[in-house]
Amino acid sequence: EKKVLDASARDLTPSYDWFQTDSLITIVIYTKQKDMNAELVIVDCQDKRLRGEIIVDDHSYLVEVDLDHAVQEDMAVNIAEKVGKVEIILKKKDNIHWKMLGQALEGHNTFIKHTERGLFYRKCKLVSKTEVTHDTKLLCLMLPRSTHLRVPIGQHVYLKQTIAGTEVVKPYTPVLPFLPLDLKEPPRHDGAHLYLMIKIYSCGLFTQALDHLQIGDSISVSNPEGNFKKSQVQTSEDLFLLAAGTGFTPMVKLLNFALTEVGCLRTVRLIFFNKTEDDILWRNQLEQLALKDERFEFQFILSQPTKDWVGKQGKISSSLLSEFVKRSRKDSKVLICICGPTPFTEQGVQYLKDLGYSQEEIHAFTA
Ligand code: FAD
Ligand code: NAD
Image (cartoon, rainbow, N blue to C red; front, side, top):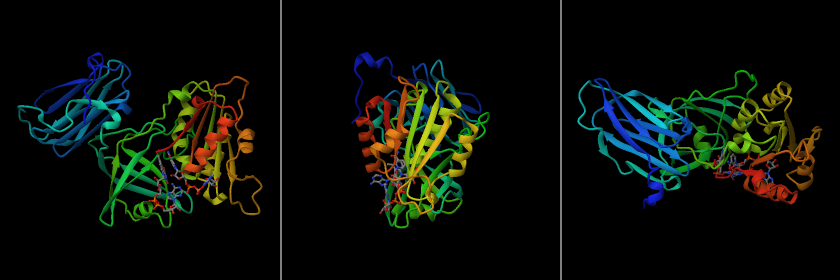
C-alpha cells in the first residue's frame, strides 16, 4: 500500500522530465533537496528497464520505466548537489527519435516511505577472493556498468543466492580494500567495486555457498540499508569502536572517515574482541595505522587465548569497558559504536548505559 503524502508535504515531492538528442536520452530528476549527494541516488538500467531511486530523508522517489527503445550499457549520472538536480544520461543504441520515454512500471513516479520500498537486487560479478584469516575472506564484487550505487558508511547490503532451490538472503557490510594507511591518499570508493569481508562458517548455509562461488560468477546484491548517520561522528571528539569478530566490518569505513575527514577528533580507539589471535582481522594493518596516526589506538581482547597471549583476555564486561572507554577530557563529546554477535552488542549497550553514557552517545549496529 502506497501512502499519499499530506498536502503540506506535497510540494516537496520530487518530479522528473526528460529530453533527447540524436544519440542521448537525458532524464532529469528535480529532488527539491538542497544537499543531494551520490549516496542518495541509486540507478540501474538492465536491458530496457530503467530504475532510478532517490532517497529524500526517510522517503524514496522512484522513476521506473520500460524504455521505449534499447540503450547502450554505459550510463552517466550527474548530481548537482546544491540545487538537488539529478541527471541520468543514457546512450541510444540506434539514433532514432523516441516518441516517449517508455511505459511506466509499478513504482514509477511514486514518493513513499523508504522502508515501504522493496529491496532491489542487481547481479554483480565476483572479481577476486583473498584470504584475510584462516576462515575469513575479502570478496571483491563488480557492479554492472549500468548501475550507480554507493554504500554509505555504516550501512549494509543483502546478498541473495538460491541454495538447494530456495532463495536465501543475508546482510553484509561493505568494507574498503584496506585501511587508510596513506592519509594523504585514503582508499576511495571507485564506484564500481564492493569489498566484503566474510567469515566462512564450516556449517554455515549461506557462507558455504558463497565460498563455492568462482571468479566470474554472479551474485545478487541489494540496495543499502541502515540507520547510521555520519553526522554523529562529525561532531565527536572521542570515538570508541567496540567490535567483536566480523563486527569489525562497519568500523572499517568509519575509521577511514574519522581519521581522514573529521577535524575535531582527538582520539579514536578500537576495542577488538576475538576468540584467538588467529581470528584478529587486519591485525597488521591496524598496527601500522596506529604507528601512522597518533590519534588512533587499539586494544585486542581475546576470549580463548593460548597460554602465550600476554594481552588482555575475557569477554565484554563492565570493568573492561570502564578501563578502555574514557572521555579524553571531562566534557568531551563521545561516540561509542558497537557491533558483533547480538548478545555482545546487547550486553555492551547495557554496560555503557550503566556506566553513564547516554543513548545519543551510543550507536549499535544491527540488522
Ligand atoms: P548459518 O547457516 O546461519 O549458521 C551456521 C553456523 O554459523 C552457526 O551454527 C554458528 O556457529 C555460525 N553463525 C551463524 N550466524 C552467526 C551469528 N550471527 N553469530 C555467531 N555465529 C553465527 N558477516 C560477515 O562475515 N561479514 C559481514 O560484513 C557481515 N555483516 C553483517 C551485517 C548485518 C547487519 C548482520 C545482521 C549480519 C552480518 N553478518 C556479517 C553476518 C551474516 O549476515 C550471516 O549471519 C553469516 O554470514 C552466517 O551466515 P550462514 O548462513 O553462513 O550461517
Ligand atoms: P566470534 O564467534 O568469533 O566471537 C568474537 C568475539 O565476540 C568473542 O571472542 C567474544 O568476545 C564475543 N562474543 C561472542 N559471543 C558472545 C556472547 N554470547 N556474549 C558476549 N560476547 C560474545 O564472532 P563471529 O563469528 O565473527 O561473529 C560476528 C557477529 O557479528 C555475527 O553474529 C554477525 O552477525 C555480527 N555482525 C553484525 C553486523 C551488524 O549488525 N551490522 C555486522 C557484522 C557482523
